[in-house]
Image (cartoon, rainbow, N blue to C red):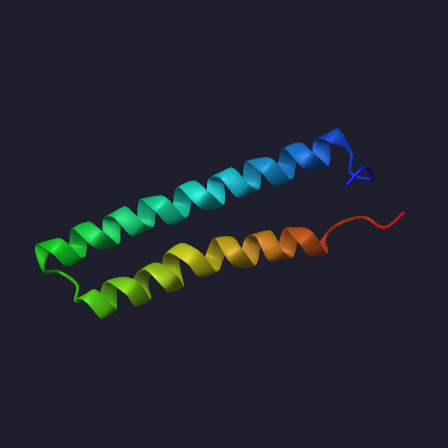
Length: 70
């Protein structure tokens, strides 16, 4: 925890904030599409998982792998 520079903390915090906002926005869109009849309940859930959760999770996981070693 103490080995990270201030810039790394800022980048990771920014990436996490974007990931959370992306997931919430996609969840809202999927609920609206489900409620309006464009998607079934299962379709909305699968779409949210594949488009809303997986890309930010993979991006954050990849960010974890790019840490410089001392």
